[in-house]
Image (cartoon, rainbow, N blue to C red; front, side, top):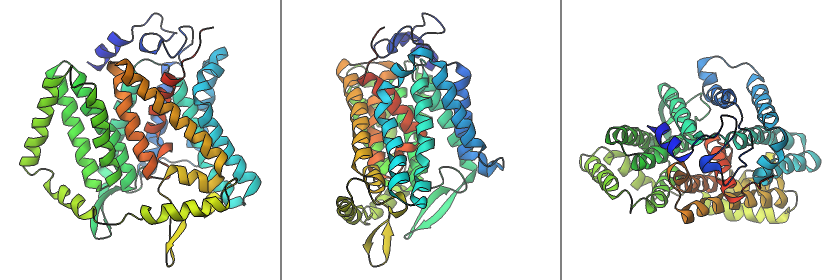
Length: 402
C-alpha cells in the first residue's frame, strides 16, 4: 500500500533517473544510486546497532564498510556528484572543520574523540545520495522499525534516580534517550502515514505499529522524545485536518480509549513525577556558554566537553549546538546552524506548497529531529536524523538543470 501511494506521487520515467516528487529538487538526468547500496546501508546500520549483542562484531569492519559505501554512493552519481551534495555542503563543513580544529588546536585525546564525526560524514554522504531514490523515506522507516524489533529482546529495566527506565543493553541504542528517539521516529512515521493512507485495514496496521512504538517511548521515561512526538504530530496534523478529518477523529478516539482503559496510566504517573525532577540543562547550559565564550574560536576540545554544575559534578551539555561549540568552536557551529536552517526552510517550503504523500511527512519529522538535536549531544548523528535532514535540505536547495 505504501508502494501504491509512493508510485502515485513519484512516477518513474526511467529506472536510472529520478522523477516525480523529486523533480523540483533533482535533475531528471541525475542518476539514482543502485538499490543494492541502499540495502547495504540498512545492513550496516543493523550491524552497528545489533552486531555486538549478536556476537558478530569484527574490529574496524563496520567503519570500513561504511567508508566504502560512502565512496560507492559518491561515485555512483558520476558527474552529478557535486550538484547532488551541494545542499549538504554545510553539514560536510561542520564535520571536517570539527576534526581539523581538534587536530591542530587540541590534544590527541580530543582528536580521537572527534573521530566520531567521520562516521557521521560517511552517513551524510550515503543518505544524501540515497535521497534521490523515490520512496527512500518509507523504506528507511521500515528498516528502522525492523531494527527496533531486533532490539526488543535485549531491552531491560534500569534504575535511574529512583525511576525504572528501559534500556537496550549492549546495542548501539542502549541509552534510554537514544532508544526513545529511535522508536519516537517510528511513532511519528506510522501515526502520520496511517492518517494519509486510504485503506482502513492498512491504516489500522500502521496505527497499531505506531502505538506499539509509542509504548516503547513511554517505557524509556524520556521526556525529549515524548515532547518531540507531540510537537511533530501537531505539525503533521495541521495540514491533514481538512483532508483527513475522519481518520484523525478515529485516532483521537482510539487514544482516548486507551487512556480510559489505563493502558498508559502507570507511565503517565512516572512522567508526572519526573517532570518535577531537574534535568540539569538549566544549570549546565549557562555554564557551558560561559566556558565557550572564553575559547570561542577553537573551543575547549572534545575531551573536555563535560562541564561542572555542582560540587564535583560534571555533565555533558545535552545539546548539539553546545557540544559542537565547546568541542571545536564557533566556525563548525555556524556551519551546523546553516545546515539546520536549510532543513527547517525545506520543511516550511513543503508546508507552504501543501505537498502530499511522502513529502508531507518531512515537516513533522524535521520538527522531531530538531527537538532531539536540542536535547542530546550527538542526536544529530543518528541515522534517522541524517536521513530526514537529507530529504529536507534538497527541498530548500533545488538542484539547477544542466
